[in-house]
Amino acid sequence: MLCNAPLPEMSLARLRGVTETMLITLAARVLAPEQEPDLGFRDRTAEAIAARLGFDPARFAADRKSMRGTILRARWFDRVIEAWLMRYPATLCLSFGSGLDMRQNRLNNIDAALWYDIELPEILTLREHVRPPGMIGTGLVSDELGAGSWLGALPHSQGQPILFFAEGVLMYLPPEIVWRLFARLRDFAAARKAPLGIVFDYVSPFVSRHAHSNPSVRQTGARFDWSLRQLHEVSSRVPGLILREDYDLARDISWGTSCVARLHALLTRGSRLCGAALFEAGADTV
Image (cartoon, rainbow, N blue to C red):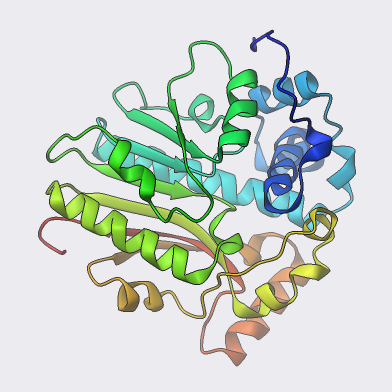
């Protein structure tokens, strides 16, 4: 059941660029049971939100690679976040660029978590109008280039584990903003002597240069900005962050994508075409 209040003036038709890309992931979650039954993914909250907004996912349905890749990525994020919460139930969860994804409703082990959804003000307004009643989480406003300016609004709890996750977001930001954000998260956790996890997805420079060839992204007019050649760049640029897990996203999307990914790896000394990763830091490593 969703909020029945009138929708804010900002309609889906007025979304442009990066903000419009949240409709790609919404479409994928709605279409998953029909298009990708082998993945066993169903998000009934996403279905209800799409109906509430009058959103037709058919707009992106033909882009099967993006639709499947989005669900593969969402499943990986869900699993990694649940595993973290098994280790640290009372975690400060920071969902950055949540869009219309109500991930809380798909996860186990979140009862003890303190959850914040961090979004642009206009998206947060739309999100609050369609969020299910009783769902945990507090909205926190961020400006697009704030690079963690919202961290100061968080409650202080010494030693409380922190998990930051950004799905389908960071590649649209300027590189200097992403690196500054990672550094601020590291310093924020270190000041509290708290374990830190950073979960994100990324694209290679090759994918970034060819973003215009992605049918779904091309519809929005958005472009990729931040990319990673190798995952060790993260630890080099932000000392103290240690890679704990990574996922080669391209390998499971399609046979053709897998072939391109293997060729790309051969030509770039093992670089992923696109992937996701979990980095960690703690008081003993920062």
